[in-house]
Image 1 (cartoon, helix red, strand yellow):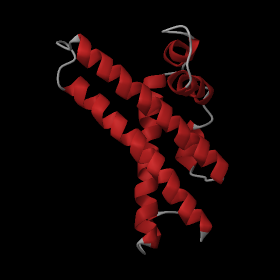
Image 2: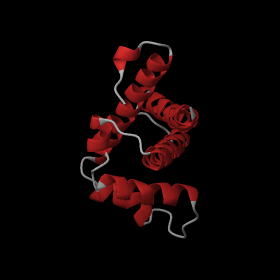
Image 3: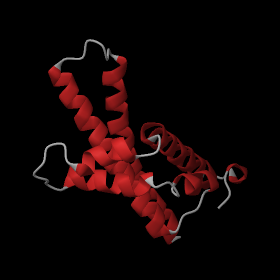
Image 4: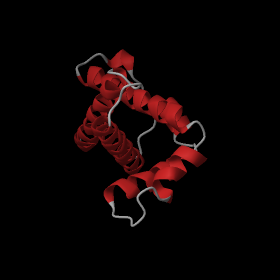
Length: 143
């Protein structure tokens, strides 16, 4: 079935986002108070790549017409459009180092940090449930 291939492909983008989130969290857990300039640069790199990749997952989710009550509710947030701008700032050149694409999500977003963590966790839940479903444990997910 084609949708399974597409979900599997979307999962690849989620894995990329998840890896960036992992590295970002590691730097923060290793000591935010004593973080040096190299670690700050790496933390910003990982966070920015995570945010950019999680927006790619949102794009794929919408293009595939997938639906999940919790994820769909989170995707109604105005943070989605701000995250798209952030992603554009990460993956497209902008002349201003800390321009609107970056600051908008942080400053104008509605609990943007909490929201992106929650969205990430819900995507993770979805993909884990989907994998269980494909293994024959059909009672764990509803499509």
